[in-house]
Image 1 (tube, rainbow, N blue to C red):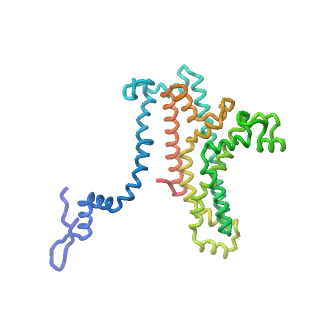
Image 2 (cartoon, helix red, strand yellow):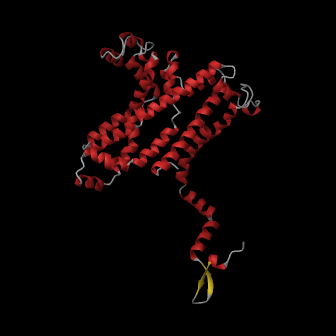
Length: 352
């Protein structure tokens, strides 16, 4: 369709002629020299892009290139041939995991691992997600800057310990039999309160499937609650003091200010962090589970990642391991999309 002159020209009544719109001229120039502007910007800030290069390389080699190996979930597992040269197996591995496919024990183990993954993540969401918010609220009420800094550093420190050191401390507290003899401090304390028997305390709480989830969640809160509170505390200190003053004039006390001023002000941050947490609901840190669990606690401790590690590396069944991890990640992606959609419709706040 031919454009009319009035669509991009302005009529000058004084001279009785048409002239081009100055704003349109600027837009045309920007579109014409777009890549030139991009190149000049990169040359101007080249130091920032050089600093960004290592991150891009990490994502390329550890995030994108490994996606090629997902083909192993649809190919006949062969330790000699590369993935591209292996025969197409269809959805046989997925069928084996879901309904058995002649290996019923494997299917039972996968569903058990999937259930444990969901339960550990769900308990972490219920008990672990509110703790950083509560800590941030407490930090905000501490008037002494020195005291607040000391408390914050003490709660941040566990995050900077390696997983091996942290799990070793947990084992020492509950005294798993293979590490030292006798019952640990926590085990002795629970036994004296009558919550567990002395025999259970001496045998090691980590050898009892009933205690694994509780130990995992408590140690997870101890490790990450302080560090995760940084985001919420930053959102709290950004609240305008006039909001507190207005609430005090209306007679609001500390608890009322938290309820009607602080929490509504950081609601968007809470929603965004909740969506991200739900997105990683099925992504359990397998390193911690791998260091804490044993054959006695498989029934409550085995998760999809450790299941894939056990069959993929120790059992040399790469197809089964790839299919298990792929299903786990697909479910996680669907959870992100669903949580984001619900949050957008319910609170008008979303991740994208």
